[in-house]
Length: 364
Length: 194
Image 1 (tube, rainbow over the protein chains, first blue to last red):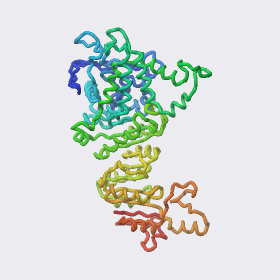
Image 2 (cartoon, rainbow over the protein chains, first blue to last red; image 1 turned 60 degrees about the vertical axis):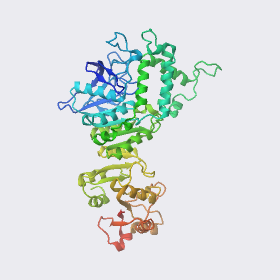
Image 3 (cartoon, rainbow over the protein chains, first blue to last red; image 1 turned 90 degrees about the vertical axis):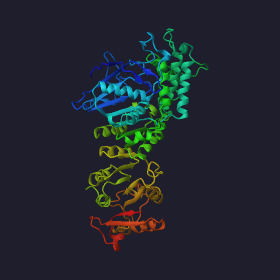
Image 4 (cartoon, helix red, strand yellow; image 1 turned 90 degrees about the horizontal axis):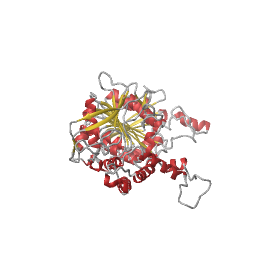
């Protein structure tokens, strides 16, 4: 297995954000897999979701776990790096190398903390376009993303229709429902009510709002799984032989959630979590006054995929996008894949899902 | 040419048409119509296996159940809505045809004729439910829940004010059958309805 190295692009052309604020300079950390061909037309952009990052496939030096979508991307896999040149970038506002709340603001000399501007899906797409230009890529053959990543793929077709041939939008939604926003708000409140959050400037105070971030992750994790997959994996299994009539960790699911929460706080920044959930909440491209013009002009070919047990972004949400695309006579295909994996099914190996991906990619 | 009805359908479909193919299977009809008629549109199928095959044929395909309301598609948004060899598997053929007429200017329906002499003889002589090359299933495992004869189909169209504008009835060998004997000699039927 090839060892993957990350790259950093430092940009000093200001990025105007949807909020009206500007990032005067910023870093983008990214990885690439496969080779860009001479025509520079075999490139694939992978857009990551809420807790994702640029390390999408392969291994870093010394790692025993590969990138987060290694089952999908690689030699001979559905996104086949023998033919395709794959790019994945850590989005701005992130916490894995690209400029975000934990980065040093060179204008003040301290980290941004809570002063980091709110970023949107549109802002990410604009910054991804900057990377694209820097890499000398003329056109994405595919832009691919699951969940929040799928929203970025959709936005590419609206904002840069001439720079994208195909969009693959997986387990996504055209906008969040009140229920989706409610879950995000509870997660934010968990973080912001942690005394160690310190008004968002915890790094300056040398603190980390671990309890709040872990709680946010635990809540999120429940919404990524299905009732059935939780029942199958944990059921009502106990850690000890019998119940103890106390409030220790007793059920396996409690232990699992706590583990997920604790693991997450060591690799993720609380302010980034706040920003990512806001980007989700704000996303609503159809409400854009230019939406009809934009959707009418795009020649992109679309593939949408949903999963039967996904209740965070259920099939009906993907179907809303499909219906909109059909109403504008767009070239679109849609597959609803049977899976017990819940929202996280988009990250899991599944024969039907992978065949759908493979056949669409190989024919386009 | 994979299927007899495809040839007729391709002859009927005008150049550059917008086509919706319900129960599209592996997408080979839309692929053919794209090649021969520069047609474009969507296939619809409920089976994920068929979706995967259709994607391999590089057609636009939507994973949906044609027994449900087809609200993906707006009124009069297609030149043709096609139901090829799937009429007999749907829950409510009349409702579906009404839905097809809402979406398309013209509706094309092909189906196996249960009035075909071989089917009649099978039941008459063997005393068993017909199993033929067009209908290869045993009665207990068949997906075909609404089989009909050509006469039945015409009666249903008449009752529901569906106007038949064209029809081609072919024998087992693929030759066209004269109208007067079609219900006996026709193995498969293709109708164009408005």
